Length: 186
Image 1 (tube, rainbow, N blue to C red):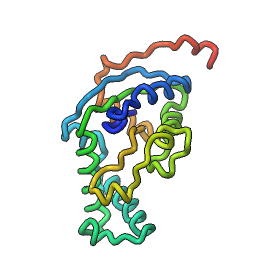
Image 2: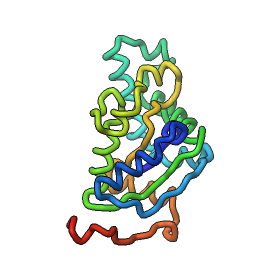
Image 3: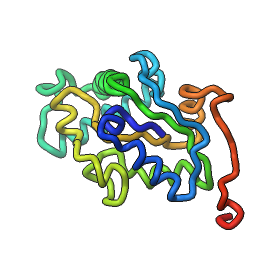
Image 4: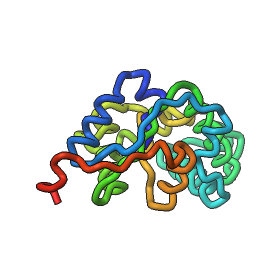
């Protein structure tokens, strides 16, 4: 999980940690980093499939709101749009410090994603980090030629988590330990 620059600048790191720990999950690694643009870009998969997927989601949003992608972005090609978004994401992630952490526990990936809420803040349920604290939208982000400011990132699956853990941490920075209440929780 990452607390992105907007979450750090808004002083929400403690709130994010509180929600993770309150759920019974444990943080086994955590640090603050101001990533370079190259390090930020390497956080993302960057595959053509991933880029096209982002571009297609953007095109769906443009269609939904009656916007012309060619007029707004100069293209309707999903791969080209995905590459633009990748640049915006890397620019945003490297725009300030981030707090990166490894969270451990039963169904940790699913639980963290539930705690942070859906990627687009308008669709995130109240009671989630994004639902409670974020108001940005893809339309505003695309109009501003920038990433959505949605406070946090949560790995989507075990492969993504493995890549991100290796990307942000060395093995010596990860510390497994028993939480005091584990004997009664599980």
